[in-house]
Image 1: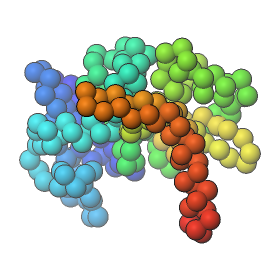
Image 2: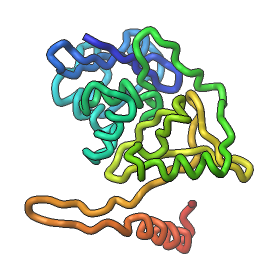
Image 3: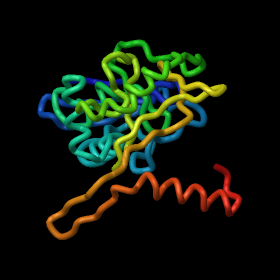
Amino acid sequence: MANLAAYMNGYRVGTFTKTTSGAHQFQYHVSWLAQPGSRPISLSMPLRHQRYRGDEAYNFFDNLLPDNTEVRNRVVARYQAASTQPFDLLSCIGQDSVGALQLVTEGHEVPDVRRIDYKALSDDELEQILTSYKSGIPLGMVREQEEFRISIAGAQEKTALLYLDGRWYLPLNATPTTHIIKLPIGKIESHSYSIDLSQSVENEYICTLIAKEFGLPG
């Protein structure tokens, strides 16, 4: 049995477990259940003392990860993860996940959410981060930036960086990012249909321009 400690905004909220049979489980921490203003990590898993098992736990944590099987396989290769299962992948890249959730190995120190740490990126380093996928490395997860590990869900391969005072930085520990950087989705093939989304980046850009014209905040 292996455990990942789950934190949210610096508070211990629960434990994510992979049993010896490979099953996924989650249980809220007693201190979080007693915390005033505590909230569930998902509406699908309301606060309770009992352990969540099966699809309830598996599906939530699976949805913290990239949808694309190829991207998951590249994460396995990059970090020598045991498999593409949610627990094994999040053991490697779950330190910064959707919903302010941090997943760290039980007993390891969790980064302080009140501390801002970042590393300035040179133009060459930025280029390396943005082009690493061409060499079969997950976008943004280059070996020279070992301390940067982030999991962003969705169909598109993506990473995130910090933009501050006209410069790009690599956010470290629990430091939040400011910009998500995406690659085109490409073609989605199925036994019954094929969708060409190779211009998904241009489509999103046009949508932001349209939203701006309607006065929506950028």
